[in-house]
Length: 242
Image (cartoon, rainbow, N blue to C red; front, side):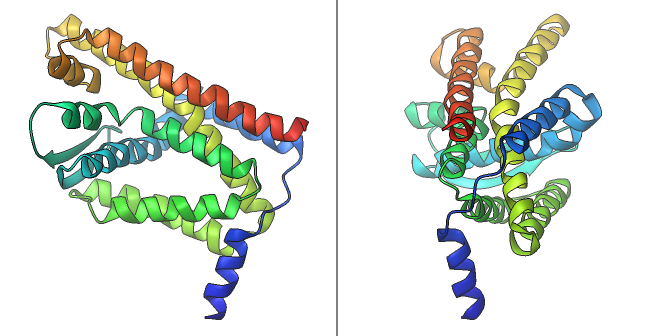
């Protein structure tokens, strides 16, 4: 009971916001991660986990039966759900992946703008736990366990400064990484088209489901991610300028 009381207190008590330099430096560090191929490949797995969680969450919300999630070593992933093969529910499920990190980043920015860094970290722990029970391959299990372990370590044992800094890093990573992933998908679509291979990307699936051009879906997904980045970034930076 003492642990629960202390945890609840830390979740519901706003923390002092970090210095402006910490916020700016965290954004700069994330930008470095996005442009350095080795760092991007390693951290991209976290984005994939959230991406697949987005597919899975919307699938459940629209009444589909979730069969499992896979995360692969090449940073790709797969979420399998059972239900009608076409229709609005399937379209929503297919469209949910790429915006998921951006929407999560937007919600995270809102929490941080109010000083709830610890609450954000616990939300992410819960998301990781929900994904973990749906993982259906060994590499995915390892990826989620490592991610969850880092989250738990920082959330439970990290100092207030470490928790806040880590929360800002994750938030910037989701906000900035989401549009990067959409552009990466479009580059992959171009390579597939040159090889004459079928388009198995989310945009390709959405094009097949809706009979709208895949490029239009790429633009829509990118627009959502950029909108979340603009609003979330304004909250984060605006908090320091207030």
